[in-house]
Amino acid sequence: MGKRLEDRSLEELWQLFPIFLVPHKKEWAGWYREEKGRLEVLLGAGRVKRVSHIGSTAVSGIWAKNIIDILLEVPDKKRMADARIIGCVNPYWQYKDKNLYDTVNTSKNRISMNKGYTEKGFAEKVYHLHIRLPCDHDELYFLSYLQMHPAVAKEYETLKLHLWKRYPHDRDGYTEAKTDFVRTYTERAKREYGNRWEW
Image (tube, rainbow, N blue to C red; front, top):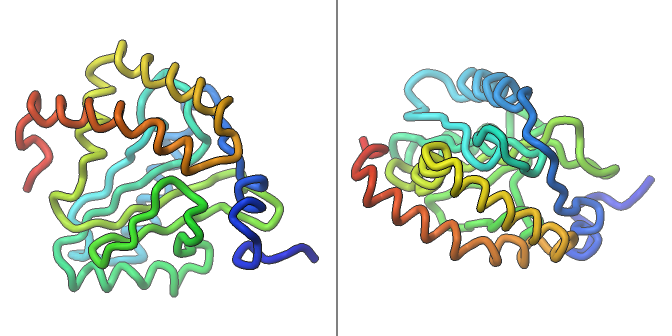
């Protein structure tokens, strides 16, 4: 039996789970809906404010990592604590650690979890779950901007394809190199859309 994931070094983990982009898959929308339904059942009524499919897999026509990012907004800090039950009642969800995945925020007001990382590599379906309080959802602005501006989405795709080749085994480098682009268009989206995503 090989090493458990938690016993591997960061370098070993990055080798096992490299950056890898694929053309857009129509199935991604279905994978998201499927998991959204499971999460809503796990958490129960009243514990979820909004669930959203975010990230490049939610942008039609561009290459992306074969990973579904889900933003789950809970009403308040009490519900944030409740959300931790996902990892207790469903053994397939694990808390992110060792900075293996895209930028992990360890704030008390954020929980990051994953599903589909195995000791043999990626499973067929892989998910990142971002649990947040209301108004902590810049990803929705960035996503909406890409969806409404196909030329910018293609520019983002080009950037990611370049970075994939440059940082195939360096998640931190890959993520950091995208930061300015994401920040720029997130701010443009906020100016253009105003309070579109606020409660």
